[in-house]
Length: 238
Image (cartoon, rainbow, N blue to C red; front, side):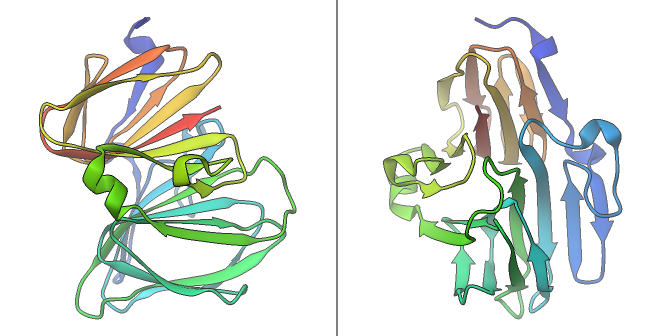
């Protein structure tokens, strides 16, 4: 039952924090780096959603993380990852990466393409258990995306072939054609954040667009309808 728009709050794309460098163009849905707004510190365990564009050949040098679940989702291009566990990989479109920093990990991220910009989302989620042994997961969901427009890519128990995460959260990727529609049921006490990647959708009569976020609390069901070809991430926070 839809209890009203007050339970759905839009985080508009053009109101996000912004960091611009000669090699990086980054938009922050939550406080990050030099951008700080007290009302946008987190949404439940969801701490960071950065939409980044990195110039060809540029990137983030080796840097540390601790006790954070870090997700990378490629929108366009490819990102080269190296870490202190010895992992060396390239993350491409249709792939998802989850890094559990745990007791501590160092990693670097560079645009793998020398002459093309890489566009991606990086998400940080607070862990359920601190101090765990660091771990790394990366997987292609290309075959699943070809068969289904709504795919579970991350979950605590690695359900349905998803990647394991150290938190009670399910992360889905939606890729809808115009006019495709679905209902998503929300459990009691759970919350949802939808992050639009591209397109236009109507969620319980609210319109959201590329780059927008939608915070959902105290709802039992979401009706999601694509107005145009649309792509989004849905975080079901438990």
